Length: 229
Ligand SMILES: C[S@@+](CC[C@H](N)C(=O)[O-])C[C@H]1O[C@@H](n2cnc3c(N)ncnc32)[C@H](O)[C@@H]1O
Image (cartoon, rainbow, N blue to C red; front, side):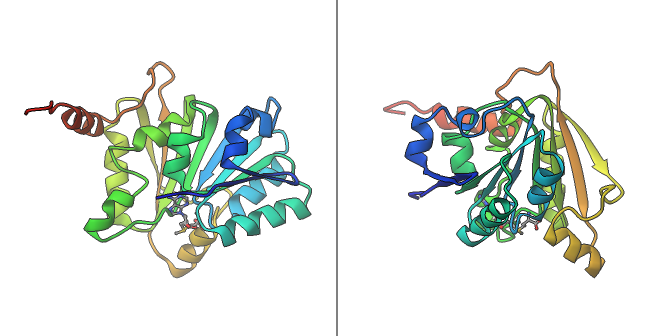
């Protein structure tokens, strides 16, 4: 699918073409602050709060829905925030085509769309075939933060992460110390729904790429047939 992308930082809006001719993220937001990324930020509550509280850090948010993306950009501009880049675009596309590797200290994914119908599972962000894209954003030692109320998907994500040789996985039994991070989390806590929270740390000694053993074998199988086979 053709994907228009808009990158917004400070008062600037750029298209994907302008972005790729520029020096990427470091040109958009120069500095030495550690990067944190949120995929599918929705109304952007968590990113806005973190960017305001941690002016010395740099934040990148990716959201496919224009309305939500515009909402966060508007709020960041009204507050004069200069440490936040917002990409309106599809996360898998951006991770595979536009984002650098191994630049972030943390990646946050809260309540990703679970795509419950089996024919839609291929749209899931967490899948052995593409987990290397999400993990590839992380520096060695970087951490992935994840939460969901859709426990069947959560269990799959937990198994995918637990089965990855580059990761050390922790199941977080209590709510985050600061309380609900996102709008969905606040709503589900009020409703009393159980929430699965995970933190996965990339082993600093494990060399990228971070192909999953189950995904990489699928890729090799897909490459194996030759003409005439
Ligand atoms: C269930 S909402 C959760 C929003 C927010 N993280 C929260 O916890 O309140 C999932 C969000 O992810 C976004 N999203 C889903 N798939 C995406 C993708 N492939 N790329 C970017 N954003 C995506 C949706 O547009 C939606 O805003």
